[in-house]
Picture (cartoon, helix red, strand yellow):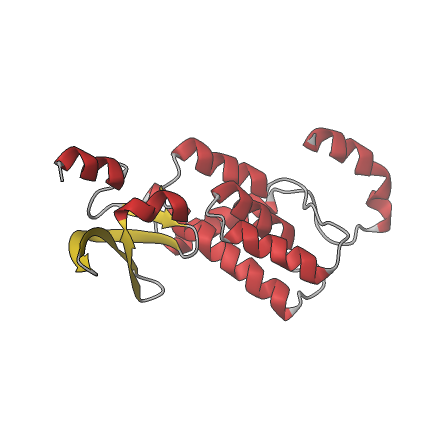
Length: 193
């Protein structure tokens, strides 16, 4: 097999590089190894997900179909952080349906879609408690987002979470509005548009 075919299959991914694997989030390519399976040679990425204490072996030919991608570029991270400042968009559909949509966004590997889930499920201290399943989805989305931001900006996850929470705090005021602020609402919406 000529080496240029291998390079094409690897899509420019290299050993030690951090990547995003949609179903699991940020991982690191530890090695690229060859295995013989059923008489055929197969080239595999060995990907480690430190936080999940898990190692995956993914055939290099399959990375496009599983949606593996390089870490987001800085402008895309900026867009995700801007998304957090927006107004939460909560559909008036049943929770089970919304939960499926949130799950799909989290597993899409799309950093902006994940930021939308974080924004939509975020609750400030003044708001009513979240249900267990809302909290689980929020934490899963926050975890994915913070891991990628941490890897891109080369900061700790804790620092990334602080940055995410700071962006969320800049969003429109969440929760019940005090009676004296109801009049000011339309002006705030024009600003957000």
